[in-house]
Image 1 (cartoon, rainbow, N blue to C red):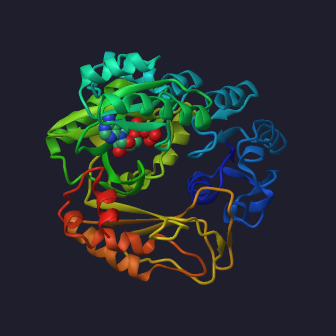
Image 2 (tube, rainbow, N blue to C red):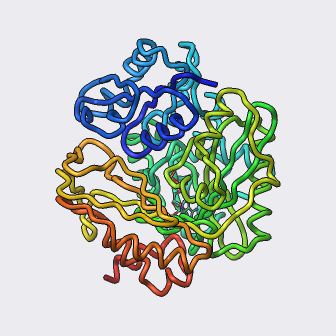
Length: 446
Ligand code: ADP
């Protein structure tokens, strides 16, 4: 097993990884920008190295600085966390070239699945259903119009390098295609430095269902069931639950086995998630994430398995500790992503925390790097805490979540805690009756 892991991230996810390492007897190295010198991930790590100024480009995305930090501290492996370098194949390659283990898939697998066009072609060949649309990249407006006429309206134009809901535009009729096409390409160029786009039918009322997977270097691959991440704003997840209130046990097993077979066939190492849209009893692949995800916590709550621990074990070359038949699902879990934002306008709300009280009790987990007096910096993602609640069934989970949200106090800045309180008190949500458009409709109605 590794003796020392450098965690190339910050905030709650850096802490999450630190915790798994600690329990495995592995020493941790935190890296940080000058803005994060007082951060909790730095305070708790065994060692820390400052890797640059506040801007992420010069610190958490600074490959030479991260590799130097690993070298001077004698780390064996680098965990990229989520976001930042976690899906950067060049980074994974350089980590390994410099003699460290990258805790994640091979650079080849990150490339294969990171490009959505090649990912879609690959999984289609391996038997996964995909959203009807273009056969690959769409090079011109004329081609886009032809694909749209064949696929039917509305259509979605999506960036091949897409992520975070960027570079995605809807066209409702032929005259909208040209504009949407140009807008999507422009946004993709700015966001990803790659303006290739492809097209898909825009599904009217799907749920976002994703399957948690892991593969090892011994040819084993298993699934941990699904998560429902349909509660979204601007194509970004706000609240997630497992299992999905929209699937039955038979569908769960079927989609899980199908997804696990795909990663087994490509010889995938590490944790990963295959995302689907689900509508009228049908699944359609949309993308694969070749990393740990923010919402892995709800899967941990219903399976009792530490996914980060398993991720570290397989990166080290050990076989999976579990077989598919060892995985069972117990109860229900919901995660609320709590952001430093105004709950109505969603304007970022950085600043000093004045008073902090996290909820507790049976079935309640708070993953957060906040503390009283901490200053939430302006430079990074606005997510400051994840409230994760488990109950023996969905109803118990909802009641526990309601009381946990009431107990949660974060003073000094605006947070999205009131938004979560309002979502979970809506009859549609209580009934599990929602799709990917539900939250946007609800926010527009208010
Ligand atoms: P990203 O990588 O930017 O997150 P995804 O392909 O994962 O992009 O899609 C993000 C979200 O966008 C989905 O969860 C869903 O809400 C919406 N979406 C994506 N593709 C479609 C589609 N074909 N029809 C309707 N909604 C879609």
